[in-house]
Length: 68
Image (cartoon, one colour):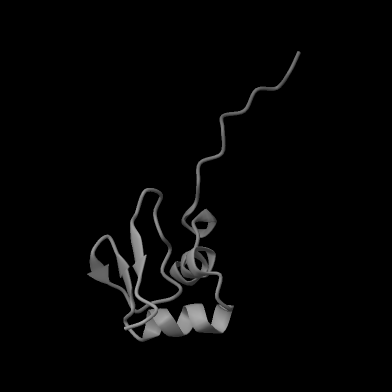
């Protein structure tokens, strides 16, 4: 008989950081992704976000303005 376990629930640490999402979207280096966040060039669901370590919830819209 198999031991059935419930599916693991996502933890906040399983969510990607804002810098990781920026890096994935732009293909830039980690340092550049963090700088874009700190410089206020990244929006999360329409609000400017300057914390590159912020965890991005599923379904959130991240917008990056690399030329600002």
